[in-house]
Amino acid sequence: MAVQQAPYQLLERDGSFEVRSYERLILAVSPESDLSGSSGFGRLFNFISGQNRDRKKIAMTAPVLNDLDQAQMTIAFVMPDEYRAGTVPQPEDPSVRIREVPARRVAAVVFKGNPAPRMIARQRAALIEWLERRHLETIGPIELARYNPPFIPGVFKRNELWVELKPLSQ
Image (cartoon, rainbow, N blue to C red):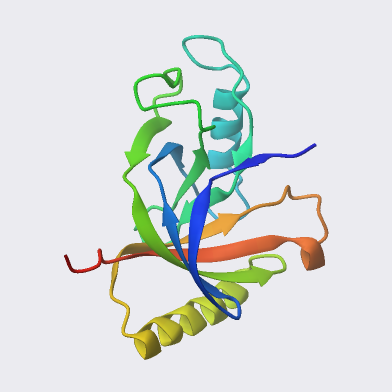
């Protein structure tokens, strides 16, 4: 079964590095305790399974995002394209909030495997080095984007690290 993915326009590719343009995204966001998704993932899954004020089921999409650079890590589900900030059912769980991310340019590094801290650190360093070589300035935190369910073997898992790029000069 195909899962809807957050649409983007590919602006540039350099090996495993990409620059993309994303339209606005609507996210359901929850605090998360660690990369295993032991707390926040369950809250978000309950939300899309109908634990919301409209009792409406919401399709699972990809990627699942983790904000890695906050004091409190977060996990976010991208809402399907048909939703706008005002049309997403309101969560019953007060720790789940709806957030709109404006259109943005993002630099990404694509990698396979289970996103363990050591692998994330290695990919983060590679992304930062690539950005510095290209003289690309960033704003905001680095995010982990995961595209596969946990039961998929690591060698087949697609992951990315994203970081927002400063807008181009007008």
